[in-house]
Amino acid sequence: MVHVTPFLSVFVPSVTVVFLTAFTLYIIRLIKGPSVPDIVLAIDCLSFDLAVFMALLSIFYGTPYLVFGSILLALWAFLLDIFVAKYLLRRGLSE
Image 1 (cartoon, rainbow, N blue to C red):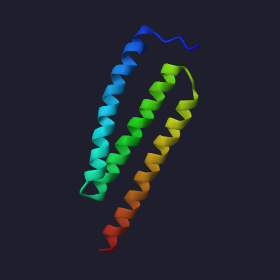
Image 2 (cartoon, one colour):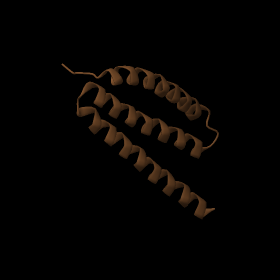
Image 3 (tube, one colour):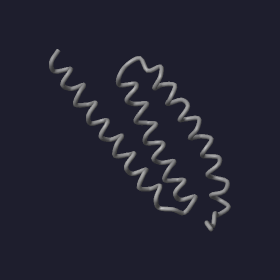
């Protein structure tokens, strides 16, 4: 049984609404993004916010397992940035 403090019982639901709003806006930018950097930025923001949200849920539920997933998600987003930057740099040098 997990003991949830009164602060967390109020904080987590209110922050969940903020995260869901942000996720919706990121998905809209992902779909409508006119350029590759816009789409990559939307994926980055979505990934990093999801990683933070998973860490927050890990604190709320008192389990360390979600932290591992959030760390892997943040590393995946960072690697995506590196690969896209290399791709854009090589494409820019060849032109």
